[in-house]
Amino acid sequence: MFHQLKKFCTSVVPFEKQELDLIDKYFTSKTLKKRELLIEEGKVCQFLAFISKGSIRHYHILDGNEKTCDISFENQWVTDFKSFTNRVSGTMNLQATEDTVVFCISRDHLGLLYQESQAFETFGRIMTEQVAHRATEIAMSLSSNKPEQRYLDLIENRPDMFQRIPQKYIANFIGISPESLSRIQKRVHQKQKS
View (tube, rainbow, N blue to C red):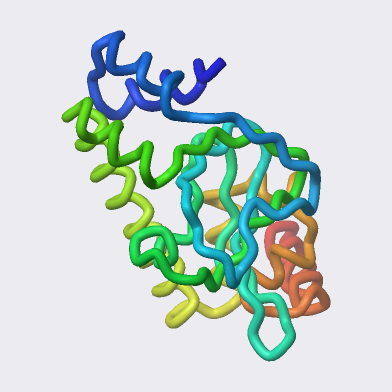
């Protein structure tokens, strides 16, 4: 059942078969319909989730408006890290943007998994470093790049986003209105034609 997760894990760290069998012991599968929340702000996040199929939008509410912080796809991990690590009420909503399947592990089971396997503890450290690196990239882009550059970066690095995610969420992630995104797309398309 967790073949995709096992394959992903072994692409990062070498595992023995009995270590990979721990995935069957500690993970559960959850199916989300489009727009369904995996976690809602205000609740304590008790899990890490691996996206097997679909996509998850990370957003919070500021002054009554949704602010998209990231969008994750297959073979990525999602959680509200601050809530998960500090056991406090979360500030993040994790919402399926299409029908999605995730494999979840609870905080308690993660601790047991780490106790049973040094390889999984190493894997967890590497994944945490990757998530921190991604968060830093997003923060730097938002603070230093103009919207058009952020759009071009998405086209280059995450082109599938434009086929799978509604324009309003992409615009929100870039930090602009959907109308501004349309203008940027038109301008970029005209530059490419000339």
